[in-house]
Each structure stands twice: as C-alpha cells, then as structure tokens.
Amino acid sequence: MFKKILIANRGEIAVRIVRACAEMGIKSVAVYAETDRYALHVKKADEAYSLGPESVAGYLNAHRLVNLAIAAGCDALHPGYGFLSESPELARICQRRGIRFIGPGTDVIHRMGDKIEARRSMIRAGIPVTPGSEGNLESVGQALELATEVGYPVMLKATSGGGGRGIRRCENEAELRRNFERVISEATKAFGSADLFLEKCIDNPRHIEVQILADSHGQVVHLFERDCSIQRRHQKLIEIAPSPQLGDEQRSHLGKLAVRAAATVGYENAGTVEFLMDDQANFYFMEMNTRLQVEHTVTEAITGVDIVQEQIRIAAGEPLRYSQEQIQRRGIAMEFRINAEDPRNDFLPSFGRITRYFAPGGPGVRTDSAIYTGYQIPPYYDSMCAKLTVWALDWEQLLNRAVRALNDMGVYGVKTTIPYHLEILNSPEFRSGHFNTGFVEAHPELINYSIRRPARDIAAAMAAAFAASNAI
Image (cartoon, rainbow, N blue to C red; front, side, top):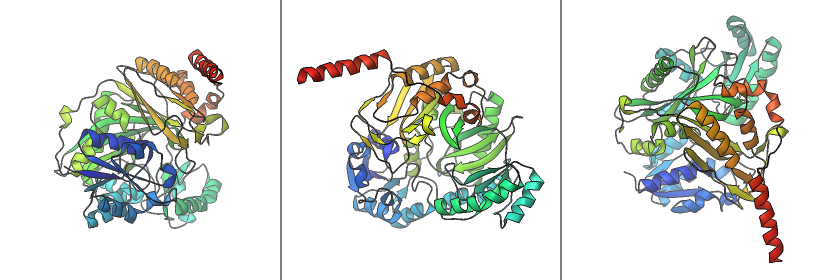
C-alpha cells in the first residue's frame, strides 16, 4: 500500500481524498495556488506545497505536479476530478517518473476521451450508440448530408469535449450552418482540438450513468446507476441513486452493459459509463468518464462502498474486495450541488466571503464542502462550494429529509442554489419521480422563488446584534 499520496486538485474533492487517506493510514500532500493558501484542503492535509501565484496554471502543470510529488516523497498521485483528472499526459508522466497514477492507464484515458474512438469501441462491444457520424466531420457539407440522413434535431459535439462544453443543438439546416464554426471555436479554446462529430438528438431523454470498479486482475463490477436528468445546459444539478425511473430488469440490463463496456476497453480503477434513455426505454451509450465523478457520494450512500478508498487499493495492485453478488443496494440517495450562484440572475456566479456557514446533520445526511465561516470563495474556479447528500429508505422519506436538510443548511454572504433546489423538491413533476433532461427548461417558474428566512435564523441574527451592542 502507498505511504504518501499527492492530491493534484483543490476544493471539496481534495478534502474528500484527504479523509480517505487518513482512514487508510496514508499521508496526504496538498497543493495550492496562492489564492488557495487558506483553503480547507490545505489545512486538512498532512503537508501542503505552493504552486505559485497563478490561480489556475499551477493546477494544470503536469510536470510541476509530478515534480512536487517526487520532492515530497510521494509514491502515488490522485487527480480528483476536473483539471488534469482525464489527462493522458499526466498519467504518462507519472508512469515515466515512477509515481502511481490513481486512475486508468494512459491508453484508456486517451481512447475514452476521444468521443469518436469511444463510440467505435462501444460498437465493437455491441453497446448501442446514438445514430451519427462514424468519424470526425470534415466539413459543414458532410454534416448537412448526415443530418438529413439521421433527421433533425441533431447535436454537434466536440470530440475531445466534456463537462457539458462544446455542444450545440441544431434544429434545422440554418442552425447547423451557424453552429458548425461556433463549436469548432469553442472546442479549440476549451480542449485544444477543433475536431467535432454529429449525433442524432434524442429529445428530452433520461440521463442515466453507471458506476463501475475494475481491478488489474480482470475483475469488473458495477455499483448500480445514478439518475442525472436534472441539469441545466448540460450541467448536472441533482443526482439520484438508484434511478427512480428504472425497474429491476432495466437496472440489471444497464449494469451488464456498463461492465461489458469497461471490460472491452481493458478499464482499470473507478469510472462511469453514461447512457441516454429515450421514451421507449432504449439505452444509448453517451460517453465514459475515466475518473471519479462529483456525484460518487450517492453511490457510496446506497452501497456502503468507499469509492475513493477502492480507487487507491486498485491503483496499489490489490484485487477488488467485492464480487458483483456481494454488492447490495439499500435505500435511495440524492445529491445537491450547492453552487455559489444566483439562479434568479441567470445563475450568475456569486463569489465572496462566507459570513456564516452551517452544515446540516441528522440521520442520512452528509455534507462535502471546502467552505467555512470567513472563507473567501475565489472567482477563478468552478462555483460549486459544497455538496449535500441525503439518504433514506424510500422516495417519499428521501424528499422530506432533503427538504429538511436544505432548510437546515446555511450559507451566508453569497447567493447559492439552495432555494432553487427547494423549489425543485416542491415540484409535483419532480416528486412523482418521472422527469427528463428538459425539466429545468420546462419549468422556468421555479426561478421565481422568494428567499425564506426561517425564524431560527432571524432569532440568531437578533441575538448576535444584541450581543454586539452590549459589547460596545
């Protein structure tokens, strides 16, 4: 087993990995840009090293990260998610310098990161994929011809894309012509590649993904699925495990597809196979994420498997500790991404100082965060500042517990998505358990919430004001 791991990330996921290391008796090493000098992951880790004054560049410098790992005496590196987590270059440098990369091999990262190659791999494995281009598009003329063949609407997608970026829906020929160069520009700026492909657009599908674990001994298991259909502009807002929209037969079928997909490409470590489900309950492979997912917490809640610790064990060469039959699910869980954003102002980021922070508790409630009272949320990174995960035995209890937990959660000083999540929970359509990726766009009225301040918060504010006046 490893003795010391460098965490090549920041924020709540870095804190999450620090905790996993602590429970395994492994020393953790944090890295930070100067703007993160007082970040929680820096405070929690056993050691911490500066990446310099630049806010983002340091986290994206693979050579510097590996050099720091070697200098600190680390024998492994965990990339978390985001930044370089799906970088074949980082994995390659780690291998060359004798540092174990906690993730899949370089070849698999490259193959699954290329959406065209991923589609070809799935086709060879007999996994259904959405109709579309067999390779990268060479011209707008080719795109127009293919769109006519598969039928509008279609999606233009960056081949090296991810995170919901580099995607444009085209309803007709005019939109396809207009968006073609736009996607090329977006892809080049975001991913350094102008390659793009075309897929038939499945209107308002369900977005269902399957968590898998695979070791270096040829064993692959799935940890059931997550429903990620509640999203805005391809960015997930709420994730649920297992999906309330699947029956047991569908669940079993999807799990087998994901295991086959992982085995076909020789996958190793934790990964996620993502599918779209249409109105006729047909599943289509969308992509494979070769890293830990933000929403891994809901899978941990229903299975009891610590996915981060399993990642570390697999990277150390240990076999999986569970057979598929031994992995059981219990109850249902939901994760809320608590973003520092103003939903009523087109989800504009709301960075600044956290004046007060209260994490909810009680049965079945888990909070993963990187914030604390007095923490300054910097404007250079993703706006997610915390994740709230709620577990219960059944759907109705889960909804009620989630409302309670969100009301108990207090993040003051910045605007957050908490009140918007509460509006979603009160939506009859959401509470029915039947929704799709078009939910947010179909319910613009949910933005028109009013900020409700519970009486206990008003009382606390009055008490603080009274104490301050007496101090004077």
